[in-house]
Image (cartoon, rainbow, N blue to C red; front, side, top):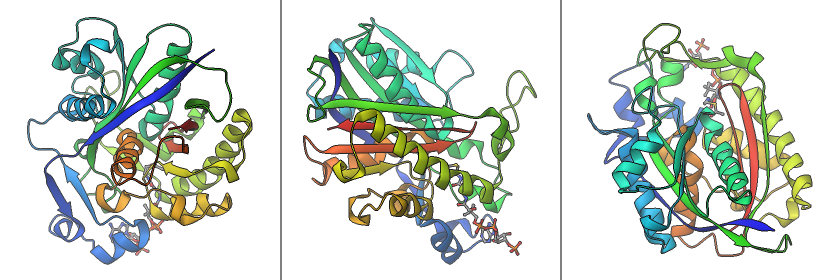
Length: 323
Ligand code: ACO
């Protein structure tokens, strides 16, 4: 059988960091409120003219260097984003061109904050089916461009950034102690649209629109659905929560992260948290957090990682990856 083995990862955040206190000039909020409710202390905001594809390319280049893989070896790019450069073509094909790649396939996956979990699952399935040998899976967002800066309940929560991993199809026996993607579980329920959406688009208003959110309801669904999907992916992988070395959750809110980890009886020290530094970067948050923990040496080769995320749609899912 084939397993999609992670060879390396990388990330990029825009230079401009905006602290909570800086937002008090824009909306009626406070550092204390934001930290208490979310754990967020700052977010990075892309410069004028800095595009999602620019963030994605910077993260991809860092991941390729970390993996020791050249651009010429890559034959698949999957970009998870809800903030593409343009309505079409896919940001992934722009990334392909900016990287100087002239072969292979590139396309976007749109599952909002679950985007990276979805993209990893799609790339893994493609590699297992021979539709590529070496893939770049990228989560990249300029999410702050969707924000209504008059809505204090949502605008303080998000940031911009990108993260990427390099996957390679390698022959394996299927044992759970072998490196690579072990299992993925994906879900969606379109009836929950109104809890988190953007009120625009090419086919509806002809404008980009702004993010709209019922925060309390999103919170409630996040805790229950994420706990369920983690149980499902562990069963699919033939593993238990005791086997997990590190949880790399979608970084939306430290209270959601703690609550899910608590229900799984995981030690908080096993959970990678970067939401304080990056805020919610949607599809970019998992590879950003992953790269932070790989770079500082917490995550080591052979460790079992759990990725879990929930986002607009609603969509939610989880992956098990032996790093
Ligand atoms: N600063 C100060 N006060 C604020 C702010 C703000 N930025 N935003 C809202 N408030 C006020 C409200 O007006 C309200 O005041 P009132 O009681 O006088 O009416 C009060 O704070 C409480 O508001 P709630 O909405 O009840 O606050 P809650 O405790 O639910 O926290 C939050 C809000 C942080 C959004 C929470 O619901 C949450 O984290 N939900 C999850 C949303 C999320 O993470 N979305 C990301 C996308 S989905 C995902 O990634 C999982």
